[in-house]
Amino acid sequence: MKFLFVGTNPEHTGAATHFIALIQAVAEAGHQVSVVAYPDGLIARGLAHTNARLYPAKFRNVFDLRGYAATFKAARQLKPDMLVGNFGKEYWPLILMGRLLRVPVTLFRHRTPPMSRLSGYLLPRLAKHFFAVSQHARQAYLDCGIPGDLVQVLYNPVNMAQCRPDPQQRREILDSLGLGDDAIVLGYAGRIHGSKGIFTLLEAAEQAMASEPQLHCLWLGHGPSSQELHERITAGAFAERHHVLGWINDVHPYYTALSMLAFPSIATETFGRVSVEAQASGVPVLGSDIGGIPETLSPNVTGLLLPPNDVGAWRDAILSMCDPARRMPMAAAARDFVQQHFSTSVIADEFVKLLRDKPPEHSSASHPLQQPRDSSAR
Image 1 (cartoon, rainbow, N blue to C red):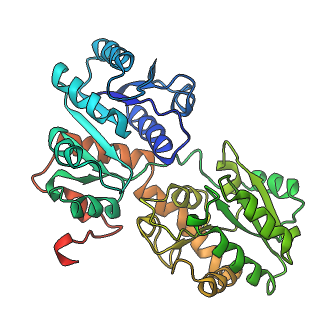
Image 2 (image 1 turned 135 degrees about the vertical axis):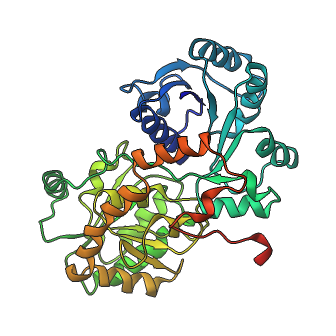
């Protein structure tokens, strides 16, 4: 198939990372791919060394004629079988151009807050395919009144070559942090914000540190709560065992240095890409049992699901995972789990299959990770 992906969001977001991984997966599967992307933005940089042809453009809003011109130029050259959009500001432009060019449109939705009433009603009906990125998100759209047969699920793909265990890299990172091979490293990677559960994690980790002298915390990310986190760590009893590195452009090498990853959100998450990437690197995950996070791991096999904002439960889970007999079997199972459910080859094949053979009732309900719940049952 021939695809024209349109994603001109310049920001570093989970949706942008998803778009890069999906485009890479489709290109690796042998399909012809062109991309309309923000010049020198995250998506353009992430695809610079792929076979995808890039067209620089900016869609500032639905009326931005320059964005239309760049997309029409790309479409004329590629003559795509499908237009694919990932960001809200491009939904209506793609629908309009799809009608003009007689090309079907596929839209991905990454957020659960409802769209405007008009967009929420029309877009899933006008697009050929409307994808949620988790069963949790799909249910949220159904709860907003979108018919179930209009919403499919396609998970975020993960590049298994980019996320993999690497003992030498682990050793180098531990050395850079002044840690020995016997260190137990609890990692957090993401936005530093209270809604992400970082202060629950901090309190639980410090309580666990009082019992486990080899436990250290590695903090990767930046956000509005960075200063408060720094102040709380400095005021605590174990400041020297917290390693705050701030924003890291490429976190993938750091996964391999972790003994476990924490995903402690107390606000609903649509999915949880960092959880899947960590497991692909052979790292078990402690995740909040909320939103789409449960779909990213196999409970008690590749990680643990925990009640959000429960310091005691998180402390006990961290301590249990400090035991190699508990942790290492999960680490061993984690990469195989991701390979089976989230690898680029699996997701690309599933994506193309869904596009080519759309059933009357979408097959997303049969996905082995989680069964969706009908809104009428709530």
